Image 1: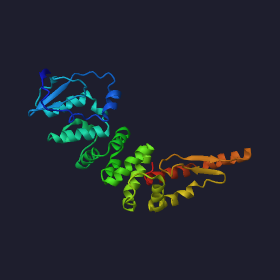
Image 2: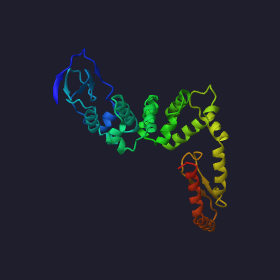
Image 3: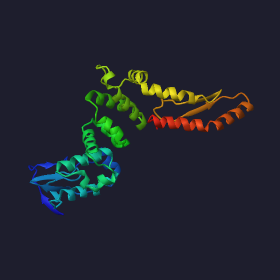
Image 4: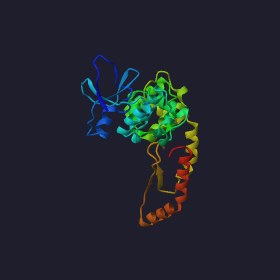
Length: 281
């Protein structure tokens, strides 16, 4: 590298190569000893800031190359892109396309098994979501099955999703269940609803969902394991955690229940097969 002087009046693009997300927290957590001099890349009379420094200066280290892939690989190597979250991959995809390249030209996207127009278009779409949704996705790193649903959301559904995240900080399985139902019942949602209302959506999803009704119809017979034995799930089967309880009045009752539980192994297997069939695992 060589040092160069850039006048304060000269335009420096400070955001395009800033692909780390969320910026402040990731800089603190991923790079606690972050010390790096200000560096830029010049391309077609435009200067691009390559790292996240808070120094007021007009002297920079110049990455002396005409090759965008070299510059991006430099940035990805420094910021450990192998551990990039889904929003960082989206930012990188945007940056790559901006300079006229394809994501398949970069080893990182092969490593992450991200190929094909659909996945790339989904990544570009989630970049436009509100900050709270993007922050949630960055920390949870959901599958593309979830991201593809979000990419289809209209503005009202996005607003509802954002307020759901802020209010509940849901687990990934809870989030998946909610947005799947939200998309399935998008035409049933009252136009006056523009944020999350727990009671409203509980009634909408579970009273009108024929798949859920079918699932419960198949599940209920399996939950009957005998007198004084109860199988429960505390969150309407949004997760696959089961609680088995029983009551006894004597040692003989206890022995009887143990025998019933031993005979119920196949029943438990059937319950989890059913959960998997309805995408609840």
